[in-house]
Length: 346
Image (cartoon, rainbow, N blue to C red):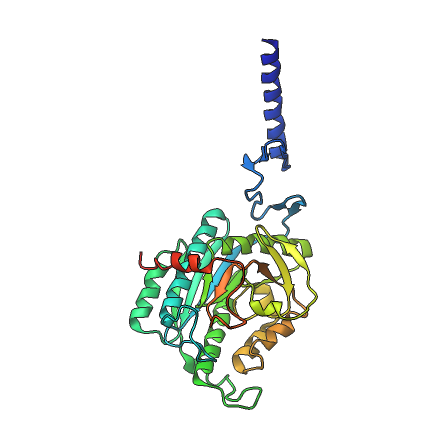
C-alpha cells in the first residue's frame, strides 16, 4: 500500500511540474519513452508553434521574432502554351492544361493544410490567367472553390504592358510573342502583390506540383531562419537539379522537416516578403521589361544582398522535359504525388 501511495504521489508531482513548465513556456523531454509531456507528443512529431517558437532536436528552441502574418499566393496560369522558350515535351507528355490543373490542385491542398494548422495567418490566392480556353478557365475557377481561403481570378490584358516591354533581348534578338505574354503575366503578378499583399508573397507558376506539406514547411522555415538571421529571406520550394552541377559554397540551415541550403540562382517560383519586393522593385520590374540572359539575371543579382534558400529534398516538382536540368528534383516519389493530384474534378 505504501508503495502505491508513493507512486501516486510521484505522478501527482510530475503532473504539477509539467503544468508549471507548460505555463512558463518551457518544454521537457522524457527520453525514456520518446515523449514530450508538455505537448503530449512523441519526439518525432512537429514540436514547433507558429509565431512563437521553432523546435528542432537536439538544437532546442529558437524564439520566433519574425512572425508570418499573412500569405498572398499568386498563381500564373496559361493552358494554351506548352513551354515559353522551348518546344520539348514535358514529363508524362500531357496537354499543358493537365499540368495546370494538377499543379493548382496540389497547391490548394497544401494551402488548406497550412490554413488548418495556422489559424492566426491570413491566406488568400489570386490566379492571373492569360488566354486559357473558356473550359479551362471554368475548371480553374471550379478548383478555386475548394480553397478554405479567399480567392480571385484575373484575366490578363497584355495590352497594358506592351509599351513597357522592350522588343529585343540582351542578345539583340527579337523576343517572341510567348515571351511578351510571359513578361506581362509576371508584371501583373508583382503589381497585384504590391497592391494586395500585407506580408508574405508566394509567386508560383502553373507547372509546379506541390507536396501536401509544402506551404506548412515553408512557413515554419521562413519564421525560423529569418528569426535566426534577424532579416527577411527568400524561399525557393524546388530543389533544382542544376544546383548540383557545380562547386558552390553554401550554408545549410534546419527547417521543420527539411534541410535548407543557401542558393544564388532560382527560377520564378518564390516565397518572399512584401518588404523585399518593394525594396528591390526595380529588379523585379526589369525582368518584366527586358529579356535578360539568363532571364532570371536580376534575381541572381538580388541574391548577392538577400538570402535565398531551397529545400533538400524538394517540396515541389517543376514539370519540364525529363532531361532538363531545371526539372526532376531528386529523391522524391513524384509519380505518387502526380497520381494523387489527378482528382482535381472531385
